[in-house]
Length: 355
Ligand code: NAD
Ligand code: TYD
Image 1 (cartoon, rainbow, N blue to C red):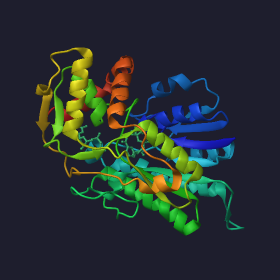
Image 2: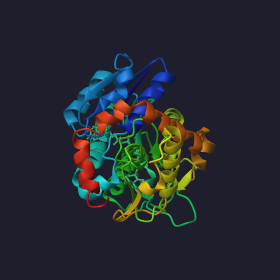
Image 3: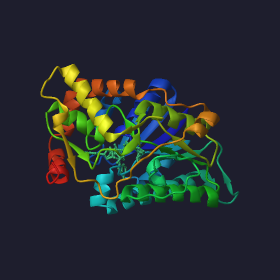
């Protein structure tokens, strides 16, 4: 039985990964270490709370003692680090926590994995172990109108968020280059799908449209993101963890570049038709002050993961966005719960001056 330490899996991508893995494998143990920040939500894991293959531990990836104890107790084969502060706008307001969780947390996981897996006397690593870092295409910076990010594109992050992720990636690479640690890094484009916290573009717009609230589009709305359906991403992570060549970076992209304004208009038109609601129209769009240092375009060339591992993004955007809207419409209570309390304070702070 393979034993995984998975971190940050009460969040968006991580919780989807738990569901994906439990559906796919019978003989597996997932130990899920999550601090439960504002973005971590045990409701995302409600349907698996009695599943013996998944153990939830509330805690911080920066906690040396706790992570050491988990390695001793469970003798992990794999570590997959999803845990991070993940929102660019928050990183612009408060960069320090991004250094703590994203950089220092990653270094703590690497150190504890090395303690558990490396025999200092024999100078050998235990067989079959791997550390996988879930990273982002944002570490490459921004593209002009032409070209794509490949795995050899130089790192050139712009935001405090992407700088912290790039820094973490360099530490992962350093553990490989210095100690020979078996690692992979995956760098994916913007994910969308169920359980995404509504501070991110797609769920925020779905929620605002439903409530006839203004739709804050940063700047001219012509920034391009390469949208990846979250389940396709989970499949890629599983494939890289099982079969990725040691030491390699894999870019994971949706082949699905769209300007933000297109995404917003698609959500408006879908919800207008499905809710049969005449108050839902493009008049809700409000172009607001642009994000500081806003990256203009991201676009991934996923050839390497396709050639090496046979992965490709299976879900076209037209299908993925319908599945996503279906999910948010069917899970109104989930949305109501995450947007009550502190969320309103966050939304007011971020958008009051804008919309
Ligand atoms: P998220 O914000 O939804 O979830 C992050 C989770 O990490 C939360 O459950 C939170 O409680 C937990 N966490 C944060 N700090 C922690 C700490 N110090 N110790 C333990 N747990 C902690 O994020 P997400 O969108 O699911 O992203 C997951 C990973 O994927 C992140 O590393 C992110 O950088 C990367 N990524 C995300 C996207 C995207 O589109 N969402 C794109 C590229 C890369
Ligand atoms: P986001 O979902 O925050 O992801 P990221 O910054 O990691 O790409 O934002 C996606 C795009 O949508 C980005 O170009 C910023 C833009 N955006 C808006 O125009 N309005 C919003 O309210 C939000 C949250 C994002």
